[in-house]
Length: 257
Image (cartoon, rainbow, N blue to C red):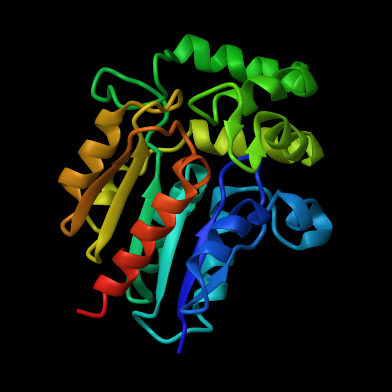
């Protein structure tokens, strides 16, 4: 029986961004990559769930309810990691076989007691970005796309231009609502509750989060291990897809031990 893996995409993206990775994983894995609320086919009121992190976590809960306990490995990239943490906070870890998160902080906003938020940002610069998203979403979108990658070219098979097309296809109001949720995020207390095998991943050249936050997560979660992709930025599953697929295959296989 194929091992189920649930992929949770980042803010402004959609489930199809994992298509290449799922193909690389092969027939031993049952890869699921839905559009999260507010994104793609799950955008707007007609989709049945609002554009909130809580609604994303509830969608994950509904999907995992279809599997036995301790059956599914969840892979959360950026906002998808925040969704996974919110799921753990609300529903626990009983249905998780393992967890992988990719380049995310449990608290985006920097503060006196937290230096591991958005890289090189302050409360004032985050507020300025929020205003820009409100006033000129189309103009702000190229900057979002550029920060996804280590280089201006983007990733093999998914360029910066490809990323921009996905971003601009999203509903701007939904993206702004989810950004507000992300800015308000503080899930530091959840990390120590993640009592399943956990792989904490990041790109060494990330322009979004400092390496120190992934180090902190790996040191705080009881069963966590660290993995750094040296040639990647915020999106190692895209930028080093073959290496990421190999790592994920080995991690899931190790859960059988």
